[in-house]
Every structure is written in structure tokens, then in C-alpha cells.
Image (tube, rainbow, N blue to C red; front, top):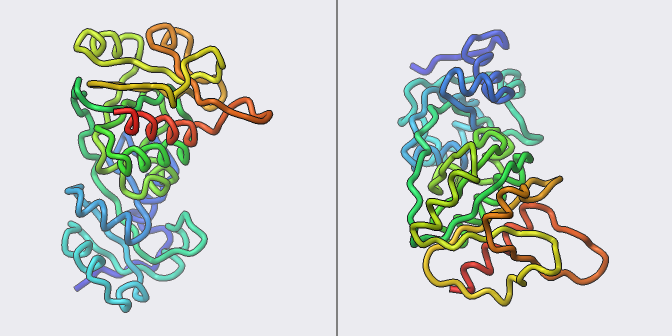
Length: 260
């Protein structure tokens, strides 16, 4: 019989809320929070361990197969009241499906023949999620993250729509140490810049492995990283001086794929 939770002070509910709100809590518990049937279902399909599932009676009554698969995969499932669901929800129109998952290992090796995007201290969770979603859609080999916001931030997970659980990710604390060995292994290193004197991306021809660096929303690619890479730019007309980080990344990744 499914456990019922009606109290907002339930310890499982309070833990889920902490995981949704705090990167520190996620690190301490080695767990993260997801909301919505699609994201929770993607976690199951990606082989992520579901520690706790919360579901409302209304969600169960919809009788969706993906929900029953989630409930079957979860180690614990609780039927929650509308008030508890509202407390758990991070969205305007909650579906009544939530889960707490164990963090999977995300230390992927970089294939020197692959195509990668690297993010240099990108801090907006929505930007990070959008970049990873686009990277998966365009068939990139993976992404390298340096000093970025927490990939398990609920906003990042929603923006990525499951891609953060599927695309191979490599974390590093120092791109200036991480990138040179890749060049030694034959990878081409690129860094984006709004400088009009840099090589225009549409003129780029790529053979073999390549990694392109996208910079921080406010400061762009750090000077030390820029010095290690070929500088490339997105030609722009009009008076705009730069693009949003996720948009710049999308155009860059499209050109990398097109140029091969």
C-alpha cells in the first residue's frame, strides 16, 4: 500500500525542498530533485536511481504508462496531498509528479576525435540547460564544464529537458590545464569572442576533433583560456555587441557540425 503524506513538515518533503533550493544540500546528500512526468521519466530511462517518488492522486488517475514505470522504478513512492504538491512544486502548473534521485557519476572521458562545447563559468542555470539540450540535439560528443552553476539546479534540469542526464559531461576546475593536453592529442581548440578581427565562424572548416569554448555571460571567455585557443566570432549586423550565452553556443555548435 502506498504511503500517504499530508503534512508539510514531513521529513521526506522537507528534504526534497532543500534539494530543490540548495546546491550545498545536493552535494551533501548526493541527490537532486526533479519535477514533472517527463523529467522524472527521463531519469528512469537514463538509468538514474530514483530514491523517492511523490505523486498526487490526480496524477495517478490520468493513468499514464510513464508514471507507472516511474513508480515501479522508485525505491519509495508516496501519495501526496495537493498542499504538499504545491509546497514541492517549482512551476506555475504542477503536474503532481516529483522525485528525488541519486546523482549519477558524470566524469566522462573526452574523445580526441569528437566535437565538444566547453562552458567557461556560465552561471545562469537556464543558459546551461539550454546549451546542453542543444548540444544533444545537434549530436555533439559531449560538454566540458568549468566553474559553471550546478547542473542539478532545477532550472537547469528543466531547461535541458533531460539532456543533462544523457549527454556525456566532463567537469574541470581549470580549463588552462585541461585544454593543452587535448591539443597535444590532436584536438583543435576554439574560443568565441565578439572581436570582429577573429575568424568568422561561417568560414570555419573543421576536420577531426574540436572543442569550442563559450564564455561567462558577463565577461566572456577568460583571457587565459582565450590565449590558448583560435579566436572565432559570430558575424553580427546592426548595433548589437554580443549575444546571449546560450544563443551564441547554439550558433557555434551548429557551425561546428555544419563545417565538418
